[in-house]
Length: 149
Image (cartoon, rainbow, N blue to C red; front, side, top):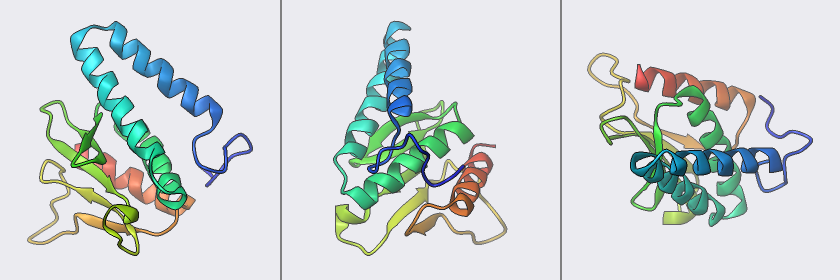
């Protein structure tokens, strides 16, 4: 997937992506209590992303699209004010921390212990994100798929 498409707004999601996410939130609310909770979590994540500075927002929006495509069973929710994605047990698997939140020089993609990234006696669980490229997108999707396997 390219960094942007011809219909992508300069600040991130395309109009079509925004509409699709709103439709999905409405569908979840229509499913009842459990669906409403998922829809509220999704809306909270989208609202939080919208509040970010332009650079962080662009990264978070692409990360959101990639995580939800790679692991559609994860539920979006905020976690300590950050966009996060939880498994069926409600445990956070992956999260995004914007650079602006703590005044750091890069945003991070992080994984919690519910992620299945174990590799020997030591493995990385947090990744610095400076820009979004097709290579970054592919690597993030691969990590998320492994984390939920």
